Length: 176
Image (cartoon, rainbow, N blue to C red; front, side):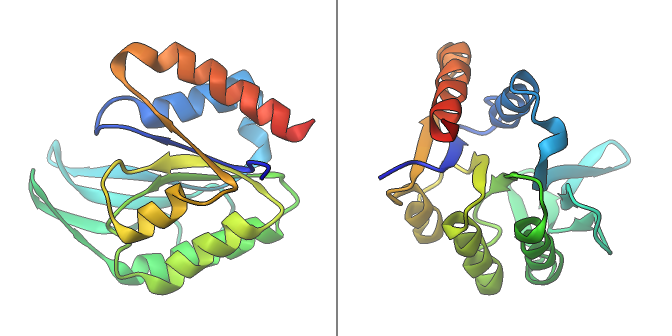
């Protein structure tokens, strides 16, 4: 089966999002993508959670998806996934831009079932998807990793450049 969904996984802090941004830069796709990025937000220099940033112009962008009470615990805000997340993914599928970025899909979405269903619709669509998957084992993440049309690249400290070149090669092969 032809691969059309490409995800980077690996340990926290290894550089998955940086690798994704390098792929987009090297292929000159920065202006050809829609989708989302998950970004940290801070209060008084302390990370307090994450927010969802749409790469497509959409109402109510940059809404929090989690609250972080301690460095080890992050509580999801499921309604953000079910509203902003679903809306931005549906708008991304309708957009003329050819590539959808999902940076990052993880376990905060574990109870956001409408969002999960919408992710599967995106993965089933004609759009090429490139993103980041949390390394954890979870039924939702395992289902994405196990799809026949999905390639998953495991990033380690020593293979950044190798994975960068491999993803670029595979993306170009998919488009030819």
